[in-house]
Image (cartoon, rainbow, N blue to C red; front, top):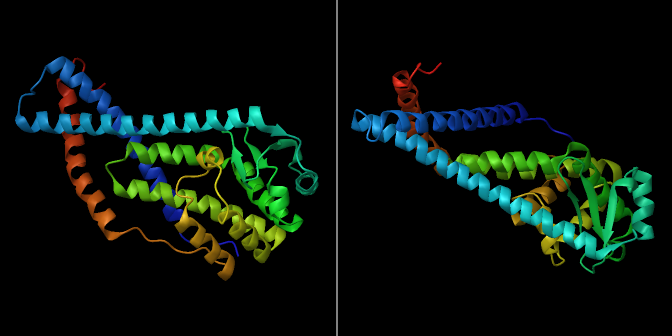
Length: 285
């Protein structure tokens, strides 16, 4: 049931994206130094346009990443506030299943009729459930849901997803970057589903998933869920449970062409920015 097809390519894409983001940030620092030292405009219009493009695109990436970081921090504060005000003892049906899975020590419960379970926290993640989960699902379905969240816990998916979202936000000028972040969110869900299905069975997990999807979402819990965990994600997860194989998703050709067009401008601009560093005191080194 576990498939690793396409993983090397995905890892390569993420490595390239992270390297590109770090290189872009370093070039932005270089662009600031060039304008501060050589003044504006630079000796030629091409130099001025190229270095300005590097600086403006990096500023856009920094703003987009900052927006993601602020939204994540706000969602985390809202979730922790709801835990402080609504904390309750873990209901017995949930506690019993968590004890079997060995995750009861990292489980919190809040009062609420809305049934949900979510993994939260970056460095030391925990599982948060609502008391309504105990009445909405059968014991077997509760076990499946907790097994799903335990896999998120084990893999530290909240932290991994935040890194993916920050990197994709910096590359906001590349539509392919946003697709990668959405694909990462779905991949984490599919991986957790495979672990849960192996523990509780595919039909049990599918039943729990469809029940939870049909209920109103808790805003605080939704803020902690991975980006892209929407209708398309639900469809892909159900498809995996039905077929036993993860669905394949290909990026839209328009996204790839738009990303290639942007890179065709950024790559020569970056090369020009790097070449201009020779005019700085001491050169690049």
